[in-house]
Image 1: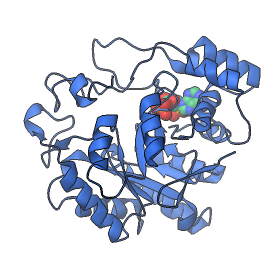
Image 2: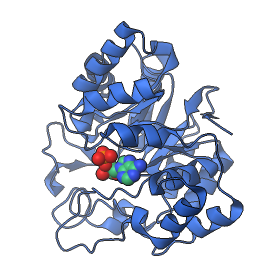
Image 3: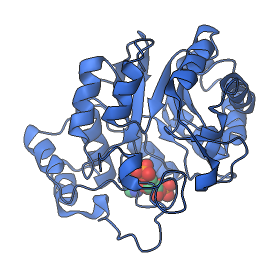
Length: 319
Ligand code: A2P
């Protein structure tokens, strides 16, 4: 059973990583420490999460204590949209490396395919949006790769259309596309495209993100871990609903990034590597309805008053 997945760079990305989005400063450091002690070797960060300094302190403490060495762990971070302009990528990565107290990243991703004016507020308004220029940004990503500041580069939140735009540059093929992925939003077509191009897919919100931010007036999708199918498979396999859903992701060839700040759940989320779901259970999980993109960014980055006018446009109709 895979504990790591091979990337097109030759590197191996650990199948389970700790997500740090929505982990409060004051809590995220503790969760990184608990995760490394529980055996995690993959931490997923981003500048825009506003907690990289604290993650860095926890990493430094773990190195000092001897829990892990730098070369034993995988650290991902992401370029925020305000840093996509000319000459901005390298300084942004330098800042992230400083905050994380690292000399290099294992993977650096373009966080979302939206470019914002420097110093835009969060969330940004239409007047802060600038033309997304993948050619310019990808060139700068390739430069920091060449300099060794990161061992691999990739993208996040990219639709099939945007991924094809990157591929048509005919330069470095992204190592990873990190996207929302769970049984309610299985992304079969995107997954197939990535497989055929040698791009590994990492699943964010692999548990269905029950603590997601939701715009006012947007109907709530079901809570994935409370659905009958998930509960039934959990009972049958004597695993928790969270473990069942994470295992589903790994068996489909994607790495998964469960976020937790709770020590017990951090532990159980890693315990998904030495057992298997049957084809029948996999199929039942894949069949859960409704199919819905939970983090559609409505009211955040997409829709009236946001950087991109409509959700449909943000996701190139893949909604
Ligand atoms: P907590 O941090 O208190 O554990 P996602 O990664 O899909 O965004 O989901 C994160 C949410 O799921 C958080 O609210 C997290 O809460 C919760 N969570 C994490 N692991 C589990 C688990 N094994 N079972 C149930 N809920 C979980």
